[in-house]
Image (cartoon, rainbow, N blue to C red):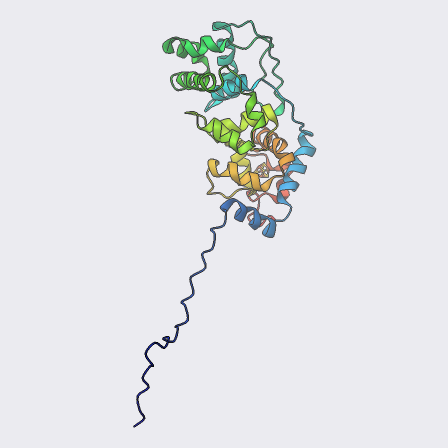
Length: 285
Ligand code: SF4
């Protein structure tokens, strides 16, 4: 029988190899993941769509259409209603609360679904903010959803005045776009869509506003996944479109949704991007 090996007192015990820590993988950003998927399996889809729409509807250059405070109020008025109704409500504000400010010239281009506002001074924002709520509701009633929108208009104007000392949002143009979007969405009733419209149209910021037209067209083409919410689509687009084409992408997609890719009976036959549309063929490249 072999003698037992006895460890010498004081001798170091043999070290067990340290258990390997599991490597924690950073979860991949789902927006980047989707952009990579499209790049791999449907290469060139985004430029194909934007080039095709641009050829049909013309090149879209950014130009400011309104002052940012007017833009945010007009955009709130468009929420869940047609742009033509928002125009009626905005004009009613101008009449009910006139100001001595310089006339604003509304030059909306093809991204706008109304006829454009006549040249006139913007409303007096102090009067709008401090109006009696029932009165303000009556004034903007022609635009629809007045009981929800009137308090939203006042809360927005109050927040701007309290934080900035006046009704002025020009400071947003000096902020990084996503920080500016966060600032706006921290106001009750302002979501990514409204915030992105203000930033894109007033400052040419590379953020995407996804309304129902943009969402519908994008899902049919397969630019964004069917299951993505509009909220998610706002951020997906930041990975899909080059910043310098973001404004044009919004305007072209929204216009295409109104002109050809209607919710009911889209006109595939005359569509400039049908060759790569997943609604026309599930195997479209
Ligand atoms: S092919 Fe039809 S569904 Fe596809 S984008 Fe064009 S109009 Fe819309």
